[in-house]
Image (cartoon, rainbow, N blue to C red):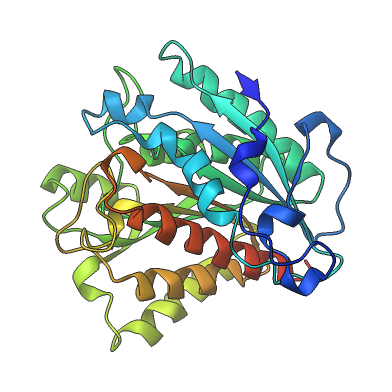
Length: 320
């Protein structure tokens, strides 16, 4: 089911009604039905929400991420508008997962992402459980030639390479994609040694997944890791960036389905987002597993909103 975003999600402090240098996002973001989106000049971004945590439920996780998209919007709303005159952000609404129909919802999300990308708009998807990624991928693939090479970069504590023969979930998406699409490669940063079984590490090796362990993401290793990311991005026609908030140390992001005691510092995650979204081949970003029901004082939501803003800032400042 597709629905427009409620106006109340884009409300906040107003410092001026005339001086645009004092505006905040809620004063500039426009709510537009997806079918009314016009062609872009590469300096526009479309935001779509995925109101779903059915995949998390199927994966036996803690549900509540379906509340993430609107919570992220409300946190974004009062952030300062720092973009240039020809840069625009539109909110095209939400896809809702009804009656546990995850696969239908993912297909509908893909249709919205496809429209945005064919209009040459940068795309931001607000999840939802990490099953959001599969719908995001479907849209990116549909907007490209079949033989175009897609590089998926995932910032995550988990591989999400579980079997999907019984049913897809928030733990199966990357295996689905890699086994169904020979023109996709997968690079994941932040993998928890204690958060993945040996079988999942074996499957990652079998599927030729590039990965960096959480414990290896250090200041000393940063130049080498950034070089590896650059090489990966240069070798693909399109880059899709996805962030699962459970990659962060639980002290910074308690409001997630599967908290990580040994997770990453927000500064490292920000650095990766900056690097990837500054690359000309990166056209879309999604954020997943923000669970306001489990959050403490809105910390996870606010941090997630800042990550979204970081992605928007880099995507929109590029000319291509």
